[in-house]
Amino acid sequence: MSALPNSIEARDAAYQLHPLVDLKAYEKTGGLVIERGEGVYVFDNSGKRYIEGLAGLWSVAVGFGEKRLSDVAKAQMDKLPYYHIFSGKTHGPSVELAEKLVHMAPVPMSKVHFTSSGSEANDLVVKLCWYRSNALGKPEKKKIIGRQKGYHGVTIAAGSITGLPRNHQSFDLPLPQMRHTLCPDYAGTALPGESERDFSGRMAAELEKLILEEGPDTVAAFFGEPVMASGGVFVPPEGYWQEIQAVLRKYDVLLVADEVICGFGRTGQMFGSQTYGIEPDVMVLSKQLSSSYLPLSAILMNESFYEPIARESERLGTFGHGFTASGHPVATAVGLENLKIIEERDLVGNCRERSPLFLRRLAELSQHPLGKGFRGVGLIGALELKPRETPGAAGAALAEAALEEGLIGRSIGDAFCLCPPLIITDEEVNAMFDALARALDKIAA
Ligand code: PMP
Image (tube, rainbow, N blue to C red; front, side, top):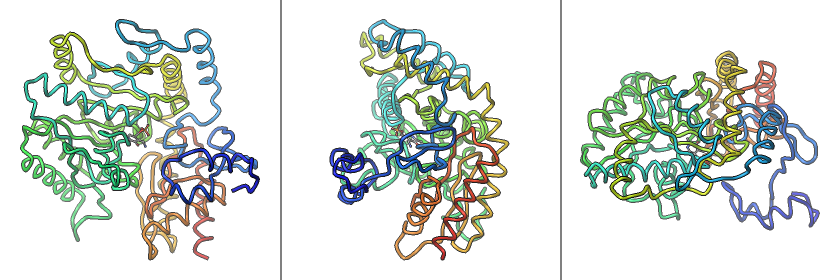
């Protein structure tokens, strides 16, 4: 940290509470100040350039400094910087984006509700599931099943569905309605000789066992990321989603696809649900929806999810929910323009075309003396390292060495995760892995 008492680093450490750090340690070390971005690169306040190998937080699909988005934001700011959609009001940008999302959806969808973050959206889906069960005269059907190592956010309900101890411990989570089933980590947890298909069958059998133990009449929904990202990038093994969906259908349990990271091209198709043949009742979208240029998330629901909710609001005389920023005109205008860019530049096609090189280089690095394996699909992947004595130490050391080499990624335990902007070129993919290879050599030495 800059020693100067008035430096941005010192003032940051003095005044700001940061996510995902040891707060006491941060008071002493401070953080890295990122000042500007351009394409797949960001620059710190000393002018050093980094490849943003995680697209910020798995989100900046169109890269940094996309002028079309700042222009649209400015134009909408000038025209109507804010309005709400409560009590019978609406505005153009929210309507246009809602219509666009319904038309883009990979399965028939009916209504969209906008929120500002992935957590908020997942939290609201829980509330909507509860409201809907009440509407259907099934007030006992309220339990929600997530997965160990799943990530759905940090608000009280979304944080409860998340299956990571650090998001529960000392926060008095999870809520009593939440359950967690196994993480489909095939490489890490398959039985000796177990095929991917058999493993997937076992995951589904475990889910069925949990539903039967709880009582199918008490389980409302299952939440899953098509590819689990924040838990360490776990790509579903063969047949996994088919087996899981068969169990959910058998017991009338809703399927919520949390597409917050997979949505808009990450896995090589527009939605992760398409890559894995998932037919969700509800889709949760964020991050690449606006490339995170502004906070925006959306809940996309089918008619059979929506209809009982609408009926209940008729009975009660109003739908008692809404956020000040729901459908925010500047955020939805930016979201719409961002989706136009993704389509016009065929960034989903770019993901598919860059993916073989991305996965080949990941596979090669897994052969490094410090490598243990790799996982990936499209332009999201993880290099698993051989653990040191302290779990997570190898991953942390690699993240630090990568930073020195001009690459920002994310270490999750001993997995080093990459999820670059979808605009990335082959040269930039190679530059990213060259930096990672140098970092590996450095910590091996
Ligand atoms: N769901 C998934 C799959 C996510 O990856 C994230 C964020 N990493 C969230 C939900 C939460 O989103 P937010 O941080 O915007 O609340």
